[in-house]
Image 1 (cartoon, helix red, strand yellow):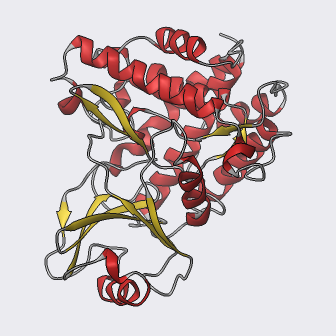
Image 2 (cartoon, helix red, strand yellow; image 1 turned 90 degrees about the vertical axis):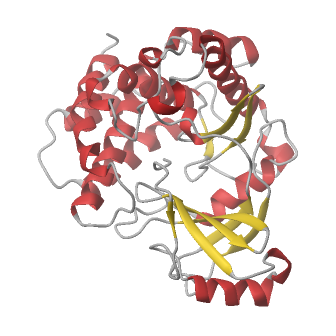
Image 3 (cartoon, one colour; image 1 turned 90 degrees about the horizontal axis):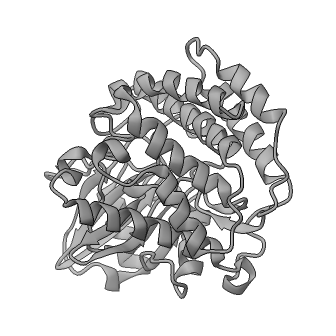
Length: 356
């Protein structure tokens, strides 16, 4: 999950979560060609999930990704997996940044990290960015988003070296168990209805006929770098939860952002969902589904269970962010309202899992 840009340039010292002196020494020893001058950094996304920094060394700009600060949930922030899937997708039709270096050594900056090329484009995450777009640009951008998701789901994992990237069998049931476990590790306050939603999902897992595709895990508009003149998706970002599984999980989560949070008063001005969905002038979720179905070979079938899973997953993520915020372990702004999103997500998830 990408955080709001906080535009926090370093002034002689590194932004939180980054030791510039040790990083510069590591690059000088291992990849000196990547940096041609004093190293500076700016936090461009931080606190909710993996942290993203813009590095400048001379006239070259690079992007660094590392896990979040504190309360890191197991398997959720694996730099090697994220690096691997981006590298594997480079020769496909799915636009991704070029990866340059993976450092598994957590003694360099305090956590494993990787570097990738900076891709020019805009991350559309707020109404202040999307409102100036024309109706045609918003529609074209939404359709390009769906075309890119369909392209991802048509990639044959074995053809790009990802045959062992996950365990497709039982993927949906494991998703329920996984996020239930994450909930238990993030729970710090009463959350009415969330246990009922968990149990309802666990008791009604569908067959998962589409299993075995590459799943992004958090696909949405503001996890893309895009352009509008002309409209294009230039890079898909934030692959930390990618695996092999049922692609309808991606579609269900996208619809959760689009139709659930995008139509919730709690999302107004909130960094998770502000600027998304029909209320922001974009096409409806039904139009997104039609576009996706027409571009790939996935049988979308009934999606209500997958939307319910998306609601549960996003509620757990928001609760984890809320918990980290209460501990003072978030970087950037806007996190004081993240906890407000949990209740409407749980409520909609309960309706969805019942087929309503």
